[in-house]
Length: 170
Image (cartoon, rainbow, N blue to C red):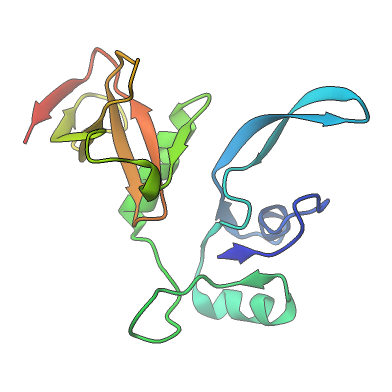
């Protein structure tokens, strides 16, 4: 979904929807802002207008019709005006990946180059990523192994693979 409120709104849509009982996820990041001459660390959405709501369209339609700053994100092409839906497993893996990290590293599809994306792998471990298949990502100057957890071309989170995990090449 899209939240068209101003960046300095006191109650962004993801907070309002949570207060109404919806299960909402928005990728958050920490930034340092200066307000009234004081620097402070603030948690803000990584992409200001992006949020994911886990509910049926029938339950959400009345709220979207009533709120002018809340819109669906539509897929390009056919079928016309079809809201984008993310598969349950894909979204669950993304939320788990972001929740396991203190400071998640997000990248958009345009930021990744062919040189950065490596071999396809499967993680074999006791943790939350057991059986997950993804691609290795290398970042210049980093020696850590990272895998990419993606959401249908919207956004990817780079997750550090622990040394105790077994990484199987596919």
